[in-house]
Structure formats: C-alpha cells, structure tokens
Length: 420
Image (cartoon, rainbow, N blue to C red; front, side):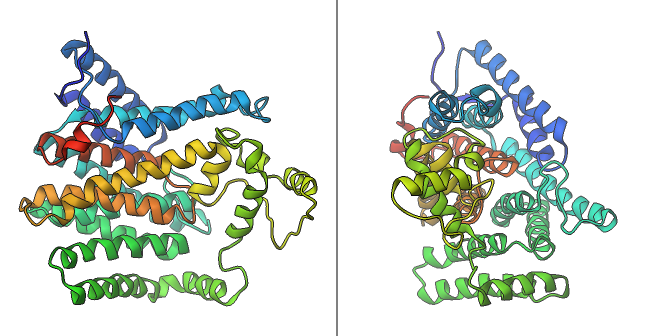
C-alpha cells in the first residue's frame, strides 16, 4: 500500500529535474523529454519504495486548476473547437511535473545542482538570444524554446529571483553564477522593450534588498532599498541600448493609453465572463470568448453599446487574473490567487526570521519568495505561470519547498496540509 511519507529524491530524479530546468528556455524537444523522464522516474521510485512522498501545501490548488482545465470545455459554448484533449494536456504535464517535484525531499548537494542548472540555463538563453538576434534581423531577441519576447522577458524573472537568492550562499562559484543570472536578466530588459518586465524586475529587486532592512526593523534601510531597486533599473534604462525602451516609456506615460489597452481588454472580459462564470470557457478560449461579436451581443442584452474606446479584443488577457476569469472562471481565479498567497505565506516568514542563521536556507527561501513576486507583479501585465517561465518558476518553488521541508523549516500548518 502506498504511503504519504517523506521520500528523498533519487539520483535519476534529480538528474532529470536538473536537465529539464536547464533545457526549458533553450531546447524544445529535450525539455519535454526530460520532464517526461522525471515523471517516469518518479513513478518507478514511488512503486519501488511504496511512497508517494510527503505533503505539499501548494499541490491541491494546482490539482484544482488541472481539474478545471479538463472540466471547463465540457460546459463551454466553444467546446466544439476547444476540447479537453486539445487544450488541457500541456499545462497538465507542467502541473504534474511540479506536483511530483514538491513531494520529494532534497539534500543540500541535490538542491545546489538543480539551482545551478536553472541559473546556467537562464544565462545561456540570454547570451544565445543576443547572438541569434544579431543576425536574424528581428525586432526583439527571443529565447529559442520560449519564443515570443514577452514570454522570454517573463522567463528572465525566474533566474533573476534564483540568482538573487544565490548571493546569500557561501559558495563563491554559486555567487558568481547568481551575479551572472542577475546581470543577464537586466541585460535582456532594454532590447525586450518590456515595461511590464521593467516593473517586475524593479519589484523583485526592491523586495530582495528590502529583506535585509526589514529583518533589522530599519525604516531608513527599507527606504534605501526601494531607492536602490529603482536606481538599478533606471540605470539600465538610461544606457544607450535602452533608447527604444525609453521612447516606449515616454510614449506610454504621455498618452491616453498608458496601460496599452489592458484596461479595455479587462472591460471586454467583464462584459462576458458571466457566460461561463464557474469553470470558465476553457484554456486558449480567451480570443473567441471575448471577440467583438460576443462582447457586442452581451452588451446589447444589457442595453449598452459597444465603444472601441472602452472595449478591445485581443487573443489573450495580458493579465493573469483577467485570463483566469475567462478561461477557468471564478474557481480558477480563486485557486491561482490562493496559490500565490500560499507561496508568500510559506517563504516570507523564513526569509524574515531572525533565528535562521543558515545562509543557504535563507537563500533558497528568498529565491522562492522572489519567484512568487515576479509571478504576481508581472501577472498584472501578462499571463504568468502558464508557459516555460511558469514551469521553471513553479518547479523551483516546489523543489525549494521539498528542501526546506526536509530541513524541518516549514511550520505545522504547512506540513499538515491536505494530502494530495
């Protein structure tokens, strides 16, 4: 009979995890192959040891999001084109990868290997994107496996967060790798011209620097931390390669379209969300579910007119919560918000603890916290947690949880969470 007790990660599981996280921004086929091999290794080890691993506070909201993916198309008006089989499997694989990783305990050398693989993959992705960009004539650099510049920009937040956490370590080579990850993430910002990325990077830096000040109850230090985060990003934006980003920023601030239409996309979503209020219309349904035709019809029922200055159709929500409301309904909206809350509730007390003197433990907790900050802040302008950056960030958080659980640093409330 299978048990729900703590189980240490095996060599095969750690190897496939490391390879998957390294390949995520770089290689399309290998990232999927190693993700699948990790799941196969996890199942084999579970059968061999008769253990499914330990509980994780994050797993039941993730499983709930998976369930909504499979159920929503069954009740959707777009179920003839958006079916469970053509929409749900991709994110289901991501979720199973994260859930399985979170049920394992990791030793410090294992955690170090996985951490380094994630950082090295992120640095390599930025360097390669610049090299390819120099010869392909495209407007923006892009990560080979991630694709679109917005997704690539969102991915840089993960090695940025993990890299800032690595600066706490005593290992010099990990500190160097962490600095390279931070520098590469900052370097990708100017050519990406991503204002959302700039705000998210600023927020991550401010939180990272603020931790030191808050632990010492220093208001002056906290204000200096906020100023330092703004100055670092402002310094990057003022460099010559960031001229186009500065022009974009000036245009946005001086125009009536400071949110780049995201407010109008939200208005369109709010006009039609009640057609599929509980489970949503299904993944990838945002485009057809909020089309101008559908929005016009919904407004007509309410006696309202369609105003292009108020409503705008776009293929996706450009906001985590807007997208969730349409594609996974109120259930998905609540679950993803709860998941982010659990991330913060788990890592923030460890990061701020005055009793924790182990720099490695504090560094991994800070990395997990900063990934969550990136998800939340960038989620205000893009749909985070769905693609490669979602898998990398959620997996890093899951593995950090497994390591800290094995260290006995998670509270009773977390360890007693529902078994999933």
